[in-house]
Length: 152
Image (cartoon, rainbow, N blue to C red):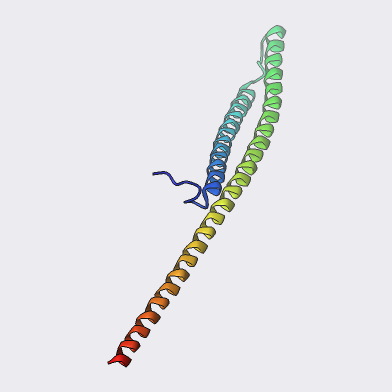
């Protein structure tokens, strides 16, 4: 059976916690995706760098073949430069996503801590009321026993 707001004084805070929990989870997934894209960009850069390092000047060939090889090497060098910029962008994006996730995680933790403290205060208040009630019962019993002892 679901609790109504009258029965659950923290219903609103629990709703806030659920929303913040979803945001935190979305942010965590965003960090994972950004990190995967960063790793993919780094892998593309490593592949292009390896291709550039493997490109060698043909020796003893005609000028047309040499020019074609140099154009291909220049294209690979341009690709390496572009991929370095892409990796830098991916790193920035991953850092931003991580900061966003940490902010969402902090907000969720704050609401969870607040709910925990409110629950603890209610438990303490309930225990205090129980102690008062037990004291009243013990005092009434003592008075009754004293009255019966005086009547005998």
